[in-house]
Length: 373
Image 1 (spheres, rainbow, N blue to C red):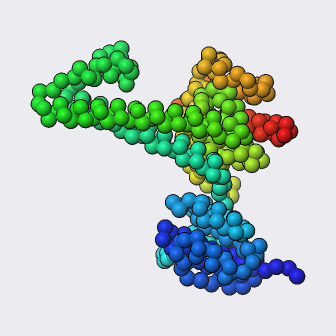
Image 2 (cartoon, rainbow, N blue to C red):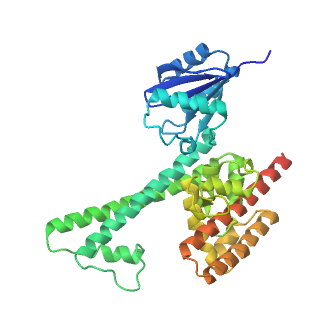
Image 3 (cartoon, one colour):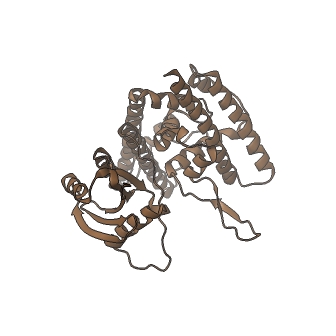
């Protein structure tokens, strides 16, 4: 006898979970709220029936993947869905937890929801560290801006020939004196905050080096291989791997490009085809590091000493893909610039194509490791 599947929608909050169930061929009904605690989740699953007959979903959000992992351990199939891809009726102006749970259950039954990739604990731990560094870099930039704007208000400009935030720049900063003690105190505090931010970034980068060395082998080999690409050092490579996961889970490069949100938007109808700016409907962290790496391809193909060092010990296949990327992307850059395209749009186009080479290297390394095993 064929088992009847129950589709369960959960609207998850920090303290409560609203529950709704859609029978396979029946109505959608609300089951009320339960506290967001493991013991109550276990009671709910026991009440709903056999775990093998349950298909549960909830939206990705600030509560993370703890609920997903608990349900998986209980033998329940669970999907964490992308909130931005949940269909919304334009005329629906009433939103409650109960209605949201019922909508999730109904759409899950209809197959209209898009599940996100759920990282394993090792991936998530390294990703948290990468994002902590990003937060520290943003705070460092704000602190530096405060110092610069403070000096600018009093007509202080660093001498020509000095690079901003270099050792010489720091030596110049500490020589600055002000007429009033209040100004001195404010400037010293701003400068101290910059030094504190520098130490914080350096500390996190040392932690990232250690975490990458201690990561599972399947993660380490891909992080090392991606560094064969120009503009992709350890931090960028680790960010790509922790944000994407296993690259071979994408069958083709365009799927990875779509995941990053770097593909053009489109609004076509009938005979008219209209394409616009990139969708940005994807992983923003991945898109950011790709944009930064793509700037390196405005220079003609070459292998610097640092790049040669990063490529040591890598297979010839990986090196060949990286060298092909330099020729392809540099030629693409010159072609688009000669057509008069805005440089930011050009770099965005390069970032999208760079993902194709990232995918190729990732798949090559992952398949080679599977064959060796």
